[in-house]
Length: 456
Image (tube, rainbow, N blue to C red; front, side):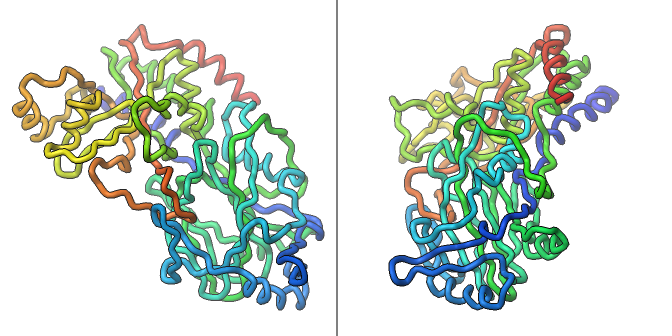
């Protein structure tokens, strides 16, 4: 018991550093009057209005804007669905409107870079691509969904909420068992004392589930941008910026927590394999086949937030993090992992067994804090059914739990803002072998690196 007592605080510190972070950044930004100007429609039907909500005419014009929008659909797998019981809102595609605001010149892209990617490599930039305008009138809403992935280079969304008079319409975000509320109407009302009229902004990672609560009055007008990886960013911040979030971990914090844990002689004194379930899900092609490039080999270029900080910290420790897809079936308590996307097809035997026997799978056994291995009745059944075994298994001490979305044999159903037949989200884990006490890793190397990072 004393050994567990000694290691628990350091282990908990590392876990909380990785897990307790917000997968979004938000705030308000003061803009010039011209930035609120919206042009929409075509030819003789083209119109102009201000989204600043400062005049009676502008408020009335919001009704006309709402009428000019199409009913918003949502994606259910590869199908575009119009169902006002799930989503009630108006939408306008990007080729039908023009906004006076340039998000790059406003430095908003730089703000998002600093907020979402704290601790990231400074050479890794982002770009914002205009996506859609949405109008949520009275009683409009959008039930829980995730943004549809459009490839490995898309990692998030940026939503601008304009100060058009409205109440309700708060955005709820859910991730990793946590929930946050972004109430733009209240934020903008509280920011009325600023000299410049303001917008509220929120940027979040694409795998974060979100929901728009019903608008109780007025018109909630938003413009959304898709966020992609791009070239080097410029780092500068306007004076009119008010940052509400983020509060999250970075490379220095993760590295220091790792060093403390690995320096503890009571933690895995004989060494072992550490497992880190990554906090974010990542897009994978649904129709991956053998012979195609393995998407896991490029995973390090997609990582977000504390996942990226963890990968960099492990590398600075001269440890070699290997990405794996972890899965288990609901009816058998057997966990397996693969180094690639697997399409099983029809099989009369348990899907996990099929992966082990035919798809280069590896059985995963869980190590308890006291060093013993957790076993289940199904483990005994497996060994009695296949007495020769498959010769491939690994015992893992899970620092953070692996994701549960890689269920084998379950029907895949996705609710997103758009239909998609090409991509799906999957969760990934990093496995790292560490040596015994006295031969852990390059701890002294990371101490110097994190010290320099902390001073910046």
